[in-house]
Amino acid sequence: MPLEAGLLEILACPACHAPLKERDTELICTGQDCGLAYPVRDGIPVLLVDEARRPG
Image (tube, rainbow, N blue to C red; front, side, top):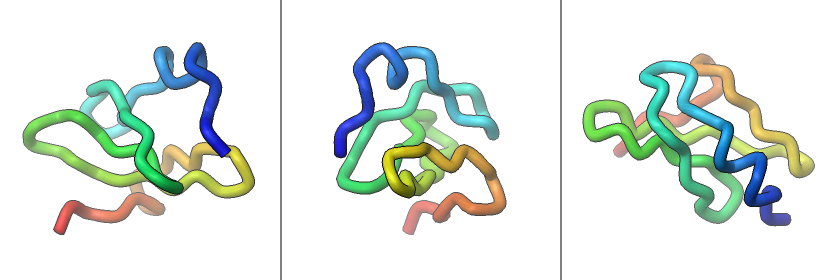
């Protein structure tokens, strides 16, 4: 389920404050040195660094 465009515009990575982009069931940080992937569960972004997947 895609997130609302307005919501995606105001969300930022909690670790580096870069914008996020939506991919499948995750929000991916666009920061060059970060790249964390945050899960979206039941349409709700889980923006906790401890829950994020490291780039691999």
